[in-house]
Image (tube, rainbow, N blue to C red; front, side, top):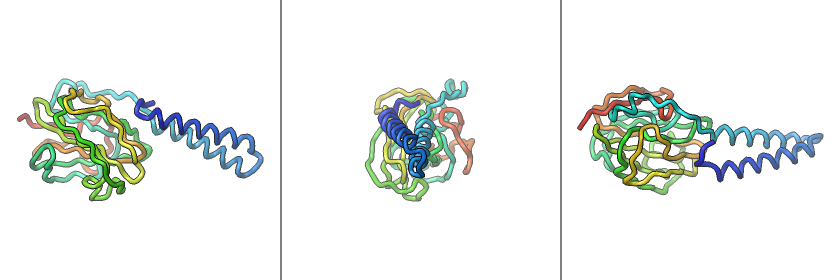
Length: 220
């Protein structure tokens, strides 16, 4: 279970247990069965959603600063070229990963390096696949630099995701595959790499945080 969700875990497990106990007491009635079912499903969902499985980080990614790993589990919903003005300050490739409520929501650093930029932005809660979600939704901006170049990524809330958790700040050193936060209850992660970067994923691919190699940076 992830350390990023203990406040939610405790509340949801207590609520699920209470519903289950009341459901058992009134089990001979239809509403007792309904409460029992809801309580069981809430407990099961809590244990499933807040899971934090260990990941086997590719050894080559630990040794090669140029390799970019997926920072989140989910489905690649968009790969586009655009101008990234915040950190890369130029032409970039954006890889957008959509996380359903059933995906692991713990986030991991995509590369080794130093956090050169960090900022939290409050915002709206558009559905994660909305074209304007990347601009308007609540989000964090994180820029990391190493010997091969720069990567910029965003934790984005969605319609269901109303809470971003992070324990990273400007000046921190990060290791590829290292946990740095979580997005709760369905969300999106945008990863920006410089234009011309070699990609290893395509639209509709499924990726796993800390395991899937998404790209290879060209050195400065």
